Length: 296
Image 1 (cartoon, rainbow, N blue to C red):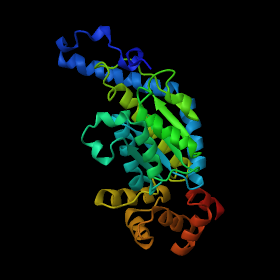
Image 2 (cartoon, rainbow, N blue to C red; image 1 turned 180 degrees about the vertical axis):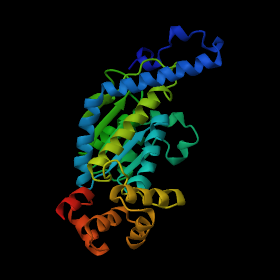
Image 3 (cartoon, helix red, strand yellow; image 1 turned 135 degrees about the vertical axis):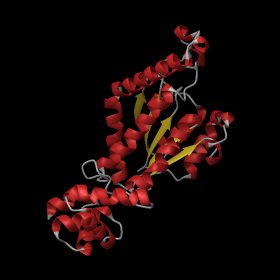
Image 4 (spheres, one colour; image 1 turned 90 degrees about the vertical axis):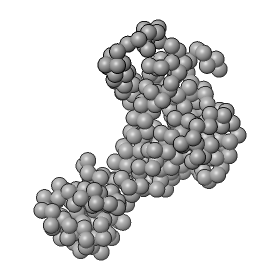
């Protein structure tokens, strides 16, 4: 593949005097670029939706959502995965990147060219048929990511590809190609900018909407939040108050009785059931609070 021809590698002629512009103008130009990135995401909404449906189906079978990438895409995957345990009480989202965790803070550009390393990292986390592996690469041709995706397909995992160029090589190797074409960057070739923003938005969509479909929210309330600090404990109380209409002291007491489990606290308050009954009901309905409430 001729990298020089990729839209993300092109230089914008209209910004050839970028270093001569005022700071305010540069801020305004970058802000406009970010809006363009979000417009590009909106244009591929059907492709994102199709990928999410597959992710939800596999996660219901106990599978994992696995992000894989090199450089900025790898870091974005690790970041999205790291947020899921506290927000959704889920360990089903993980990220791997070229060069391992050490590459998150120290750039190791050479490792992205190692296709075999991508395949080996897939083997290293025991990818199986119920998993979904999401390859992330702005260029759409990063060897490490391609190697990981090809190995995932051999293991019969479902695959998704997120790239920022049309006709990406990655797209030919995945079940669900998502080509979010953002065009040339503010700084030529710096795909941590528009491309990175578009990729981050899509990852947010994949994990968040999958969790909504899996019952990790009640309306827009994060009822599986893990209240591990003062801020989150306050959020848990507010969630119970919003979901049930009780005052905060009542919500706090219900949460204490439920050992911090927001879903259990809500179910006991809305149905009058005790903690043990609420837990049994949630288990019977695969953790889906709304279904447990409708069954009462």
